[in-house]
Amino acid sequence: MTLTGCAVSSPPPVVDIYQQDQRAGKVTSGQHRVQRGETLYSIAWRYGWDYRSLARANNIGAPYTIYPGQVISFAGGSPRETTPERPAASTPSRPTSSAGSSSSSTASTPTPAPPPPKTSSPSATGPVNWQWPASGDVLERYSSAAGGRRGIAIGGREGSPVVAAASGRVVYRGSGLTGYGNLLIIKHNDRWLSAYAHNKKLLVKEGDRVDAGQEIATMGASGTLHTQLHFEIRKDGQPVDPLALLPRKS
Image (cartoon, rainbow, N blue to C red):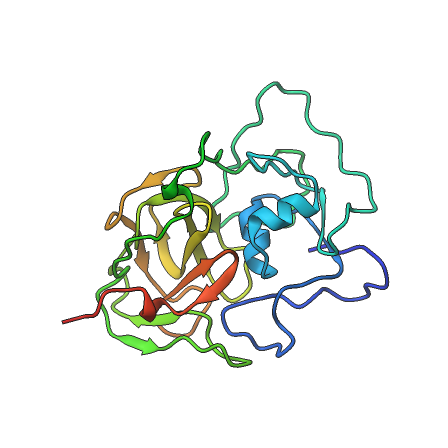
């Protein structure tokens, strides 16, 4: 990750699941240079932003296409550096992001995000019907304290199924976010996203539409020491307690 900007000598704090940096939260200074395989959603997730706010701050319109080498500003203004020239192709190609892809390439392949709904409706911002993404016991709970886990850890055996907690569209598939291992992010509507981390195998790709309960990955230990699923839910870019939204287990 290459960063530029005013008085930035080291990377801004990365919002990861373990919150080791007590300053972690929404990053409001510095810049991020887009790497191959990243999407606006994954960058917003990493730095504690709502993807719509980050798009507005950088004058990025729907469908939120970004390019390797492009500079994303967290200061609310336009990046100081010139955005790399976009390819002349008529239609950007979808990236081949995967758990094993490198994040250091600066090739000019664009990284489009799936297009938003054409018209707004209550379902675009309303509540989501959640279900459990895995059948194991809860090993760790959500905590809003400094250094706390911003989701829950669900135990299980390696290779156990991980399912979509609600219907939506896959907006990130990869391993570029520190501490998450093999990660999927699903957009459920304009306000709600969920993340599934430490997977062994990812069974869906970016842009796929998934149904609630559909198997999307298998449980693993990527990015952690023990087999588990780290599950997060975010509303308007902010983590919320999944246990407050998931149905009670009998």
